[in-house]
Length: 194
Length: 147
Image (cartoon, rainbow over all chains, first blue to last red; front, side, top):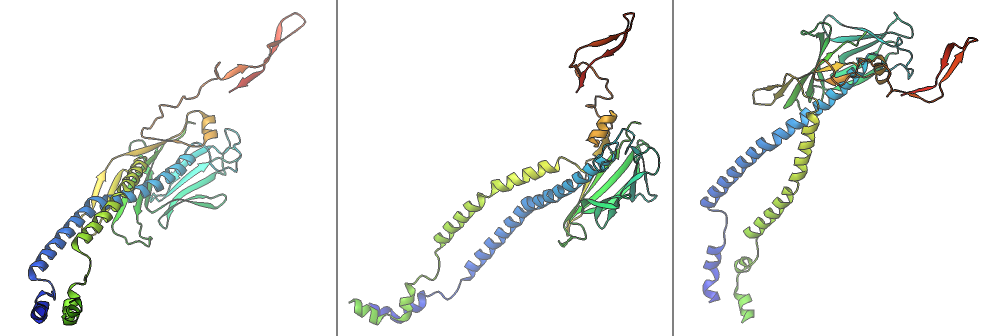
């Protein structure tokens, strides 16, 4: 029995490769799995990346809003820990540059009237920077800033409207620029009562 | 007999009995186990996305723009702007030094400039009037605690 089956059976039962039918089925299944995977990425990974970008923008916008809220509260937020009287470090007025890229906040010093304690907000290298001109101290308030525009509120000229545009990843980021997500936040400052 | 079998079988016949790789059933079982393991990570991903969404909803942008490769930019408008409203009470402004971030231009929770009331002032000492030679009250000394 073994002698009879020796040469021919061994060669015929040894598979040297795949048949064309197996290859067609395998290719079809691979393509089907690729389509399913692409659909899963489109429905799951893309919204996840979008939420990630929006959250980063919301975090930076929250930091910027907090800094603006402290400076627009009616008194200077950084007067060396000395609250002083109701007339000291009191908010005097605000102004902005003609192109709307810089916001100036003027506060009274230790005595009423000039010289004022001036705080500015402006965009520098995709960052929103707060500067106290008297001391020269600069503070980065928010990152991923691609736009900062200050103008009078169209609805109420007594108010100031601040448009802050954030983009993640911003052009300075080492990450690839696309896909990116932008959000424009609008803050309206209301002047404090006299 | 067995010795004859070994002697007469060719190398091809011996290799037939060897396993060339994993069986299909074993591969499927391995994939199922891997899938169950990956599915176990899904709740963590969902929890993370919920937390991120909650954080994102704290401050909504006026407009959102999503730029991607090979796709048209998508823009969503919420038209939500925020007001930075200072407190009406000057001492509140002085001591808190922070405007309120609101969706309206006025703060409905602001009590305004209030005068001290019985809930703010507590009499902690005796009421001590001072009389002149004719018995008229010329001064009153009180000790109060202002809250």
